[in-house]
Each structure stands twice: as C-alpha cells, then as structure tokens.
Image (cartoon, rainbow, N blue to C red; front, side, top):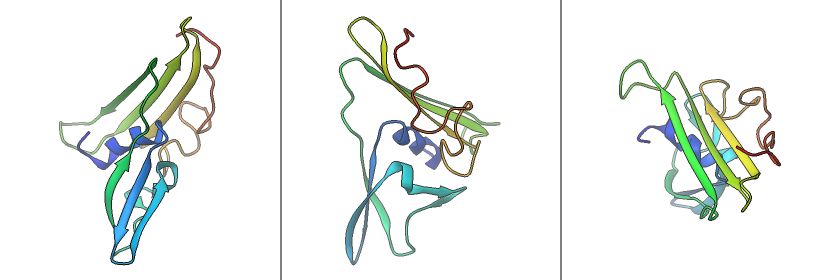
Length: 125
C-alpha cells in the first residue's frame, strides 16, 4: 500500500491519524481525515507523522485490493475490509471502505452499505 489510496484500509480498522506542525500535534480519526478526492484534513503547514492502527483481535482478518490500469497508477477502484468472527465462526463485526466510488472512502456507502453498517453481523462467512 504505497499510495494514498492504500491508506483507506485504515478507515476499515478505526485508525487515527497523528498530524503535526509548529503549533503542536492533533489526532484525527481516519474517517474524518479524507475530505474529498485527493484532499485530506491537513492544513498547509501540517504533516501526517503517524497512523495509529488498533491491534486486531485474535479472530480478525484484513484485506485490501485495488485495480489500476498499470502497476503504480492511481487505483480505478479499491476496497478494504476487516472481519471479526467468534469461536463458532460467526461474524461479530464486518467493516468495508472503498476507493474511487465517492468523494471519501466509504462515503455514500460501499456496495450499497452505509459506512459503519454491519450487514454481515451474525452470519457465517
């Protein structure tokens, strides 16, 4: 995940962005960091210095996939997912964030699901 589009996987994991400048530091949830196409919540004098990703649970898996015309090009579309299952293999939480389908990752939903919805909770994968 070498592109800014790759950071969208952080949205699916409740990450926090640490932003710094001469005035100090601030922390922004990943869901608020992406403002629009190629636009973030960074002010002109600020720099993203860290991404705090919560430790995934024991039965949690993550994935990120993007499609581009050529390797290294901006993604035409991409999706990040995080799924947690219980000891019986039943989904307890599923999150998804998409790129290039709305001005912000997951904005307006991904696959028809609103950001933060749990369409698969209670089901087996």
